[in-house]
Image (tube, one colour):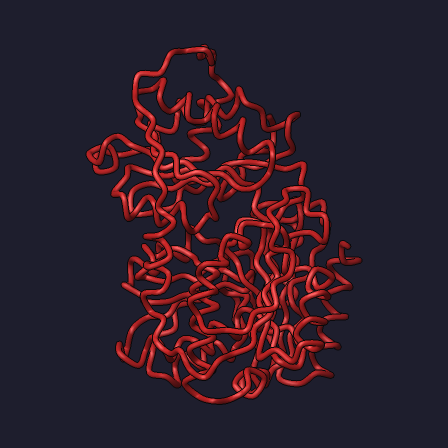
Length: 451
């Protein structure tokens, strides 16, 4: 059981780490994470699951645990994670739990949890407490239920919700979409409403991921999509991860667009009607993201990595939009939750509105040179951060998440992973030769990259 309680969710391999007994206990003790305002809505929890075969028995055990504790269950079936968030907000539930391991390989599974209005449950806002309760539990997993279970299909309502900002139907666009055999495969009825000529890749739900890993952050998983965009002359391409809460975009030239640039590209759309509004982005994002927000009259808010932090900051500043380098895009009118399909729709509307190619729209944001995120196994992570702080103390240093050091012409961030035993480096410079030089400098500290 050790190690499955993560920064933002519960996740491990099935059936040795994540078991039906653990699923029951997670459900049983979930009530202890809910406050009075949550519980005033029921108590009732929305439960759904991804396409993995073992998600079904885990969801069933989870529901038994919830009901044994007197928490009613609304089962919305096989769903993407954003649909779970929608269900929580739309049905005014006390919280929600999605059974999924997101982008992880087939042998993994776990639980993503939220409270009322899709407020995320992270390690320091409930998972740590849940870990102690589950690890110390002697509860009888065969307890009889004390509350009801209701099956509820919210997909039709979800479709209308997702389409709420969709406004431009012409001209007809050509789009390639890679569902990676994950939950993005259920988006067919939404895509049918968008007046696009679709090239669908791997739209069969299959939790064994027979074609490629459902992780669009790895470039090797985008090769099929890039080929489809070029072969079929698409306007752009989109790749979803396993539970479809993330999206990565490909331009019409087959080039991968870093998600931070998409955040900068889309921010003006939200600021047009809300001048001066806050737009939240994670600290790995390019300088050009911040500058695009400022140019559009917005207030750029830099936040540490992680959906729970981005969402909390968005709520605090009433921000209409936010984004992360990992491909999460957050929308205030989506219960401040992430939605990959809504990000696709925003890009589609932008192309129709401007009449320009995606590559041309993004090109002004490509004015800096970045390494992307590079992983390193470092035994003494805290010691390494202290060493970097000492050796790069002549720059502008902050510790919002790990260490960030900024100079006039370049910057870097080194932070401990929230999900793996790694340090992660992101570095950006005004000139390519400077980026390469400083990358080599940092490699001298951090060692050989993982993978």
